[in-house]
Amino acid sequence: GAGAFAEAGAIPDQLAAARLRVAAKAGTDAKYIAYFQSFTNTYGDADRLRALYQAAMAPEDVVILSIATRPDCLGPEISELLAELNRVKPVWVELGLQTIHPESARYLRRGYDLPVFDRAVKDLKAIGVTVIVHQILGLPGETPEMMAETARYIGQSGAEGIKFHLLHVLRNTDLAAEWQAGRVQTLELEEYISILELCLRNLPPEAVIHRLTGDGAKRDLLAPLWSGDKKRVLNAIHQAFLRDNLIQGSTL
Image (cartoon, rainbow, N blue to C red; front, side):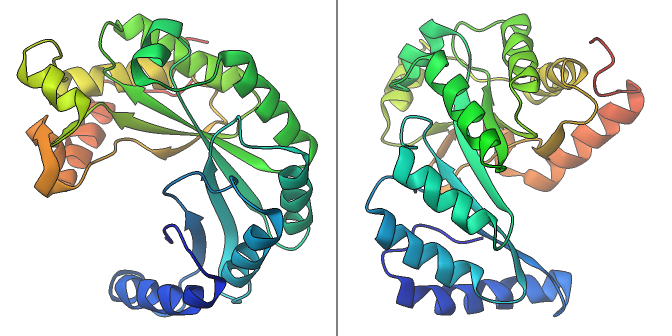
């Protein structure tokens, strides 16, 4: 993985550090995805971005370039750049949709409406880029059925993949103040898993699930505290899938 790079020159060092971290788990012949995760990675000058992305893609063991961005930051110059890079190595673009419901989008201050997302997916598919969409489970005011509707929409959008996150409360945020005042509740682990299962049943069998849960920085996590123990969470999810004989796409 790779965070927000300021300079192309810093990339080889960051990749080297990432290889050291991964080698212990994956061995030395691992392949890598260069992941520009934080901030909006298509907002800026196309030439500066080209230098960053080319530096990240250059090593032989980097097999995919993955860029997280906003659907409203994909102008013609950026699309041309992505198309150009995609001819060299596969490019994935991750879009943070989170929800299809307007009230929740306003609560999140997402800043764009659903048609903007639809257009971005269409444009990215037209240049042959793989699209992955992020969804948050547990947004205030959303029922499990509403969350399943978002998953179903993502599944029908043309995107190939989805990443599920849970709403978690981090210190020193507006959400923390709402949570402390008792206006927002977070999901219990069992609730989260049952909503996750409902969403998966509403996704096409061929949709790739890139993440089943997300976790924030432990030192800033206020709630739900269970999300800090990733191993326990993933084990509980897998056990529930077996127990409930979960089949992706079974309700479509």
